[in-house]
Image 1 (spheres, rainbow, N blue to C red):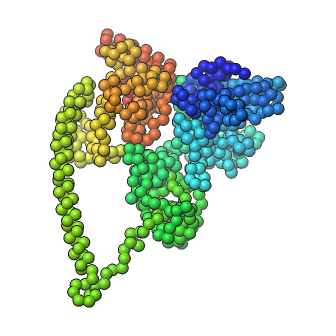
Image 2: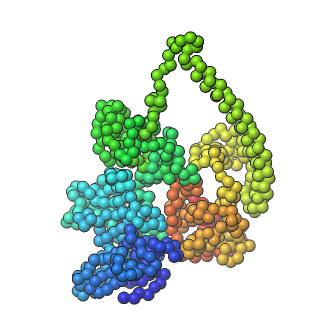
Length: 640
């Protein structure tokens, strides 16, 4: 059967609410997915061949009596199939619920996509463990293959499980321990169901036992297991998906929020103890620096390295550990088990939590756990030999004196060479910096609308020598300051940031900002936020980069910054991130998800800005503008 090819879409639901399409994230990309999309938001809600993507030359085929399948261009290899041969299939239909169904001549359902969920449940969709149904996350936002997180109903409870930890699956959330859960009756649930009232666990006789409620009048909802492992319940309102429930409200509770062996505190990532970042430019990729022992990598010199106290792990609340008589007993258990590469020891109870590998570690003041890693190599204690004898080994000085004299002489020579190199490099760097600063001043002076610049001395006076610390973020600390005109400011003092001039120039463009209304631009660009939404919908975010920065700006970083900006001007204020979250996203300490995009919002935004601009030319009263329901500058551009 031949289908009309419309941007990959070959089948629409009756009201065009959903569509079935052959989709790829990039033009000419090798990975092509057979998926179902929610048309107003372009949100993918189901994927047929997530782990066997097709190519642009492969074919989707529907044959009565056989069913639907994806085949390689040679026709011999089948990538995906409904497996309905001989079941009397006569037609294929996409319902307005988002359910793709195959029907027989009696109009009965032979096969449906609702029985084969991927990472999303839609309204009135059921998750039945008896049929092997579960949600599995995608690898990333642009890679729809199966990720390491699953949501399944087991043992009468709905669990989130992390499976990227060797052979062991570790739970990190359960519905029964959710404090926002409403309990109705005790009993064993047969399935989970999503509808407009919320996510419920349901008994065999269709009686609801418990519910995570959705307080909304919206008619469409979805539940999605995100690529980062979080689980969200959304409603579709004002033409955007709004999350009303998030399972893990703190990023530190996610298994890989800061990468493997990363340390998370207050949703900030760092490396614990002697470990160093895998990627200094992206701390969320985890930490490294020690050779961990494992079954494939064992040594008689294995020992334990203490990483720190008051540390915890997401799985500690869900696994039952053995109780030991003390720390040494816990070390013995781990040492005898080749798959144990790390353990948490609870100082009061003696509980010993051992793991083959670790994800993100949590720093918390109320934890009594200490973390130890099993390391290959000679420990500091083992490396110390027995004390040298003070007895004379014959005539002359004692045996240890001569090595001390030689060692001391070598140390003095090395120190002298190091001192010379330090001062030479410092003087040389000062000359280069002076020349570089002159170029930088010319560059900064050429940028119109740049905020006021201050010298280091001015900032030092404003902050009283950086005395009142407000907090610590990526790359440095933030201090409270007071300018001569009594304006309060927050001043970030960068610490050990190895940024080059290109990166700095890109940040100046981002931080200095762009006017929301610029009448000197052409009619398409003069209302910049509306123009930005339009470009985002067409996948052309790079077009928003200032032409003066072409060739110097890092395009992927600029696109990430634009996505953050689009989050900050969402129509619904509740969807905008807090300022702290914005800083985390810009500094790379928090993932930037795709912002909701809406053509209708862009149209309304453009109309309101035109109206506001025209109104400002005739009146100086801001109350007149606000009385017309227009978006103010603060409403439009500010985060919460």
